[in-house]
Image (tube, rainbow over all chains, first blue to last red; front, side, top):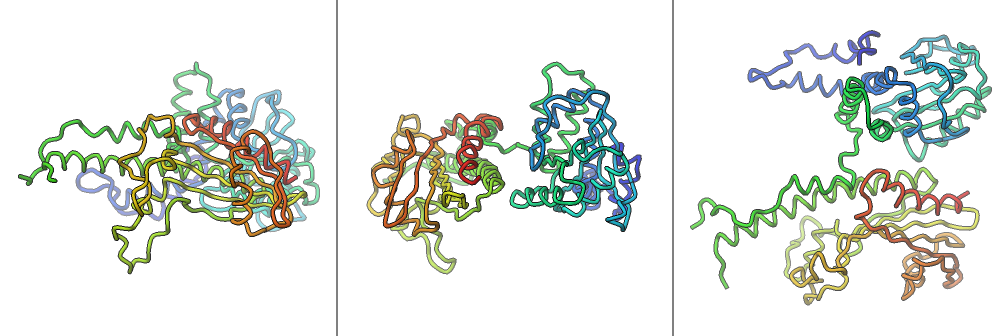
Length: 253
Length: 212
């Protein structure tokens, strides 16, 4: 979230809400609830909270989370081993479009440079992914980074549509110069799950807190496994057993 | 027969609890169906239909639904849900049927005349015949799109359990194909990884080669 603040992303979310935030009893008022809902709908906050946590986590852990969460759509699979060198995460870099694409500047959500590899993340929360946007981003990143397409991985982060994702990936790889790009899908829910499953048992408390916070935000935004089948025992316990004896019903003789 | 207000009070508390447990169960059933649906759609199958096998549709709002002859189970359709997905592979149509049987004792409980199994005479919930199971029916068919209810009835007649052990070849009125089935014990689905390992993964490993 700090990345969103640093890059003036928060204003876009907060500007429409100028009314008093709290009610007279201290509980969030209508404007406060609307503002909170707007924050949770923001793909920029979600991106910076989740991937921002990975940006400061140890490299091996970040790679393990991405590897656990990413699913292949087309091209080479996600490598088992992290590339050599330190990862360099860049949020919302702006870059000129490839001359073939023209139009406005391009702004992928995240560009991750890691050794010889470059990984582009395009995030969607409530919107759908679009092949045209993927193509513009990949061409612009290739031009800027000067790497071969085979070194470029594209990650569709959220906004997945099972029936369409493979077609989008195929469209990307059918574009001129992009045939060797590997395309992956990373659902928010899988990312949240991977933040648990890839986490080592012993973790620095500060880092654990950071990952917990990222997961709490993903949970709040609805990307959670709270209702997986395996949570049924906890739900049944929470509902509680009917007591063996009950106080007499009020108003009944 | 009369009862005491205390007994009624207690029985109604049980009903309220049962309704809450059933809602919590259905929430989670929705999740597992959705995850399976996404995986199958991703593999290239399309959802064909979903419904309940043991209940009739609710009547139109203008009809009185509470007649004594009405199955009480009709108002609990989530107890036996089924869905089917269909795709086209090089060797013919690929069909996946998934059914969730919340209580297998339904099939063996004594019947009440005209009202289905009598809930008061079910075997105990800890009886071996009372289990919660997910069933997967895995079919290939050629040529595509036969009158499926008729064909499936013929394929399954008396032999459906054989599909647990091996893939059966079948033929009916000019259509032919294969059939196998899997039974996933729901108590084994104890984590997201277990759902993948016991349900989604095996399903995809059957589907994907047949669509390739």
